[in-house]
Length: 235
Image (spheres, rainbow, N blue to C red):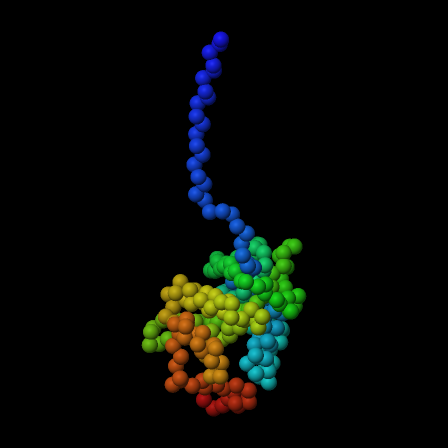
């Protein structure tokens, strides 16, 4: 009788996989980008300012036009005069810009929400990059000022506004943080702005961001006929 064949050598025992199991992301991702506004954005900026006037119950003071904005906002390089950051939002990754300013790199951040964001005015605030569509959700307008006490320039924020359907999502904080970050980058001493006294939500939001609310200060303003009265003043 022939001898039996030897048993095959034992095979290596596979090591257990330590990687976490793949799962489908939960929720609804929202891709955001803060970029510098350009003259092509004036129609969006005008609509945003009007919505802000409605929210602040100040439409009786609103007289800006697209023409007046276009002729005054973009006369100087960014950060040397009036500067606007726009907040763009999309449900898919936002394509890169074809050109950017050497003085500012767009800021991108991804949020994840339990429910999709419903924007009833999406079409009115849409920007197209080729076949990709993104939506303008808000803006911040600021410009340089100067503190004689600090001996340093700073930024004054004229307007910070997020459209209603995108509020309380962290987008306002993202915009204001971008201004503060730019101020630090440029060696500026402070960022300041005003807030309506009835807007308690905004006051709490600013305090949470580390801002001091200064109730002892009052705004003094010359405008309209009071300002025009100085045209022929004997100075």
